[in-house]
Length: 237
Image (cartoon, rainbow, N blue to C red; front, side, top):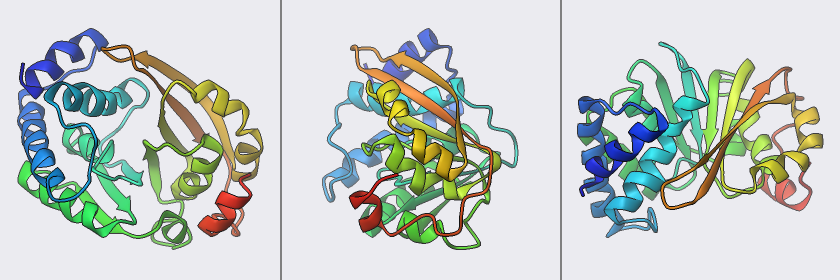
């Protein structure tokens, strides 16, 4: 089956809707992802089933954990090849999405893909997260932050929560270790004004475990955060 056929057949089982318009956009995404991946390293997953399930379906599952509304601002921190930010932008054209990454080559690819998909509600920003999180134009300006990253939750919180408004949410897309990571993030949550607001767990077709951790922003972050990346790595909260 094609990427879109595989996506649609599996998405139904999760109650995730894939409209014809979204399917067209994601079909272009899949094709261009492969083309760009021949030039630069965007993803290790390049087969049709893997793109459909481990990228597109995995990202669309945020719809089961969040309620995006017209005019909401979302920032995808460390967007890489555009996951989940560009998929969210394609699925929710009334939401404004910022795709943040420190690697210019990847952002060039993502910007090209977004343009050819016809996605006009996504903007790429080439900057390190810990630098952007200090800038007034980004700090506490977003209704949602997202990250699909391998870093521990306690580390991700320092990179992501500075972007989120009080009352907003950080959606952390994680693997099987999600619940264990919550236990290790208690100090980080308290220090950065976050509170766990639910965990949605899924098993993807093929057996891979996924979880989306909802972190509610309940208070402002002290101005000294985020620290520089060396400090975050050396002495995580």
